[in-house]
Picture (cartoon, each protein chain N blue to C red):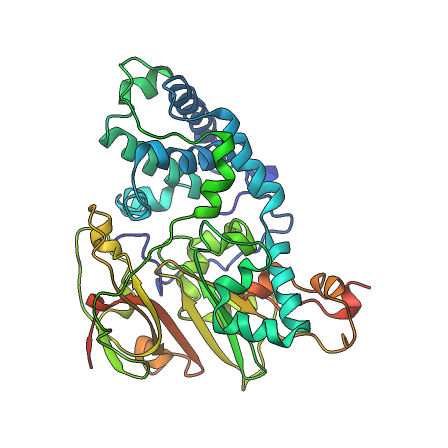
Length: 211
Length: 218
C-alpha cells in the first residue's frame, strides 16, 4: 500500500521480500502456462495494452471534445458511456461511466475507498497514490486537505463533491476549460488536460504551461 | 466484511504522495501479476466480487502489510487454490505436480482485445420499479456482514439524499457467493457534517453508490 522509491529502498522491510514475491510470480506463471491456463503471449499483450495504448490521453480527448463541441458536451453529461464510445473508448472498468461537470462553485473528486475502482478506458490504470491508504481514507473526509497534498487550494465558495466508486459506475471529471484558450483546436486543448484534472485532484494546465 | 480495505475516513497521518515519474508498474513481477490476474478470470470462472473478496478477506496486518499487487497475488492464489486449479506444493515447487483440472476457456492473445472491450457490464433488466426516487431521504443500514459488501462503514447509519438512479445492477454481496440478485442502484449523497459531525466540512458532500437493500426510508 505504500509508495515505492526504488532508489531509496534499502531500509524498507518489504525490500527483502521483493525477491521472494518475484520468484513466486515466476513460479505461478510457469505452473499456469504449463497447465495451459494462461498463454504468455496474451499476458504480454495485456501488459502492452495498458502500458502503451490505454491511458489518460484517451480521457483528454473526451474532455477536449466536450470543451469544443457543445452538442458532444451535452451527450457526455447526459449519458457518458455511449458518448465516450463515440471516440472508441469502452470496456473493462468503464462499462458504466458518468461524467461530472466542474463549475466555478463546484469541484468534483473521485475516489474508491474500498479498493481501486477507476475508469480504465479513459484514464488507464490508477496511479499508486490513488490506491494508497492516505488517499482512500482522507478523500471522503478531508478532500481539501488532499488537494493541499497535491499543492493547491480551492477558493472558499467552491463546494467539494466527492464520489466514492463503490459500485461498477466509473466517474470522469470534466474540468473547467482554462481561460485564454478561445479558438484553440481540440488537439491543442488536449495538451492542457492533465490526468489528475479528470480525477479531481488537479486542475488543467494553463496555456502558458504548455507554450 | 469489516476489514482494513474499508478505509474511508480512517485517520491516516501520512499525506497523499503524488509520484513524480509515475511508472505504471514498479517491478517486472507487478506486470506479470497484473496480467496473470486478468487472464486467469476466464479459465477460473470467478466474478469481480469473488476477486474483491479474495483480496480483502484477510487480517488487517496482512492487508496493510502487503503492497497493492501483493494483495492481488494473494487473492489470485486463494481463488485458484479454492478451485483446485493449483496446489500449494506446486507453488512451492515452482512446477506442476498434479493432474491439470480441465477448464472450458482460456485467454489467447487473439482474444485479448475482445475480452477487454466486452468488459463485465453489471446492468440487468429491471423486473420491478425502483423503491426510491431522486430527492428521497434514505438511511444507509447498519450492517456488518462477515461476507463481501460494498457499503462502506463510514456511511452506515447515516442519512443521505438519493441523487441518481443507475438502473438495476448485479448485487455484489450475493454475487461474491455466486448469485447475481440484481437490484436498483442509487447514488446517495451525504452532507459532510452528517458523516463527520459538527467539525466536518460543511462545504463537502460525499456520495456512495448503494444498492436498494442497503437503504431504508429516512
